Image 1 (spheres, chains in turn red, yellow):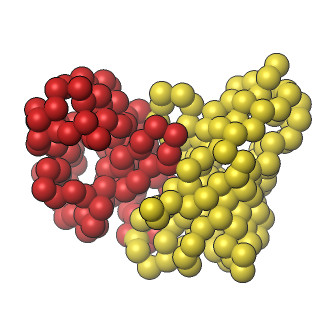
Image 2 (cartoon, one colour; image 1 turned 135 degrees about the vertical axis):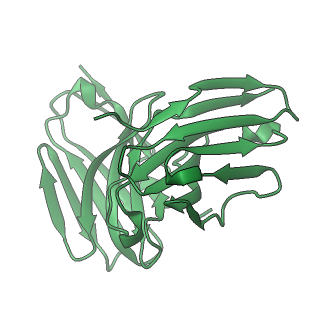
Length: 116
Length: 112
């Protein structure tokens, strides 16, 4: 069974440019998460989807970040415009049904973003 | 920051020794999970302990949970060089679905 797939693995852009990350969760997983991980820190949740619905986006900086999960499968996370401080690793994770709070989350390899 | 705390931040041991990492969290939880992250890779789930459990084992891993102290520990016995990685605890916040609050991690180095 394939794991969580993310692309691209690495991205270098200049500040003020837009950037998008893509995630394909494990087949059958209803819950999808986007995390931000700064160097030397643990991941921090940006947004959580239950199927197509964003049920927790309280930590998403909505002035420049947006996300979507069309058809409740793949998801994209976009930053426009990117700032220097957005340089980090963006992790996608999925779980069978996260609503119960007892599920293991499976993580993708992440997209490492560098903003110059 | 919502992040939990882990200590030590870094730990260096010899192969065969045991490694203990500690984690503290701030709010009521459904469960507490431990993850491993190799350099440049995603996180791998190691073990989940529910709030009504006090101790759990999986292979060379032993996890304890003390909800009165809001703390947990991860013990890796008979460590191997391949255990070298960063280890994160993540608390599943009570009544907030699948929301995990991660600690800042312990960087473990096991020398052959």
